[in-house]
Length: 228
Length: 351
Image 1 (cartoon, rainbow over the protein chains, first blue to last red):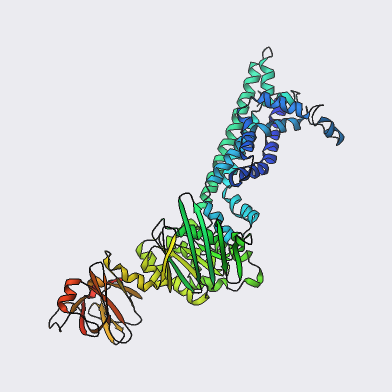
Image 2: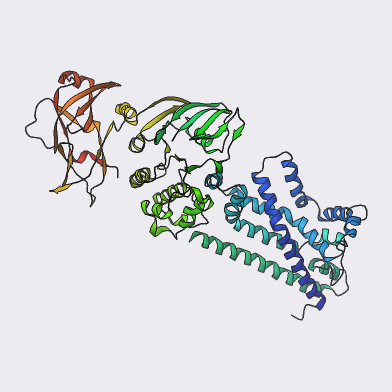
């Protein structure tokens, strides 16, 4: 693997760390939002639905710019500073960018799972004395395991490739916020960088492939375990 | 049980309006599809709210529009058994059975899981997943699961209709056993008269969203003379003797002969009113194996057919049906003796 430099390895590890962190944080929130959208009957549901899906259609750069404004001096910046937190241009910003951009994919995948649950099954659960949250955690959650897994791997893969929003709020600092796509972008502008860029492209393809195959294996395993 | 229901519910162009009280241990709700049975089920279960009215079960108010009360399904203490069983696919049989039991406050745990497992014969299925069960097994687990919550009322929504004829027959004795063992009143929603006759004491009739009557299931069954199967006489079997390929069954003061190719005799058979011939005099030589001397106790007309209720002695009755013309020619009158003739192959096994 001498085709990857130490910066490349850093980028690779950082990408994996950012994507994993973003997915782990987003998973419970995604489940909650998906449940709210699926089961909830409330005012402003259409608005929430739109807001969740917006990053899917907005250019990531726009998302990044809005986050930049929101976390900047005129936004939440001063408040965060009070608590000694700085997010912009740290790897947390890359996590945030990946979370916002990947979130709609996660929610969509979980909702597909929720739609597959027979509503009568939920009635059966409550008639057996289970309250709302009891049913949510002991019936709905286990029955959406597969779509949670599918959503998580989709989001993880999407996060690995996040570029537009990340470069806006995390910048492109090697070893700190430089993820794979940002490193490739750097190499492409460099004289003689093609070979290095290609190496990282290959690494990114391998990583994505592993994630996809792994999640497929895992869902299939779950399915078989569920059936037998 | 004491159940009081007085509800109104409008759903698009459909309007359900029902008012009844019942203290029967086994009440049936009979009506064609689209008559409002499912709507009533939902209102009782608590998944839908009546527009106005009251639902009271035992001493508890489940719903009242005037008192602005509506208990959620989990607080109604009504056990539900659905058409498709609806077991939790991610749990095994044992976990399904105990799902409600574990959530029941300790003071309410009156029904012992081992007894339920025993009565419903679930012992060897406990570790299986719902997907590995047959339709009949699934319904037994669903029944046990609802039962273990020690509900004040079991609401059975067409629990047999997803099963084929043979499996239906297998489930009926379990339902009867449950009724006898656990003394939990139930409301059985069904469009099958036979189920209602076997399983309920009283039936509410519903049509187009309105309760049109209430009677003994037997009475409703007698109106089925015009149907393709005719009225079905139910024959319970307790002991038998095997004789040259026939089962000889003591029945009242008489003995019936019947054919069943199954290795063991069943416990309940049906005999259509259409398969019973009536003779004024003793037919000397006849191939049919059953010849009963009985008294006509009642004649009733239904759609050009005459139903003839026969007292066969020992408290046993049969209903035969003849066309009105035959009734006239034979000059059938109540109180007269006739011979009822039917073949040993005329019996259909129920369970």
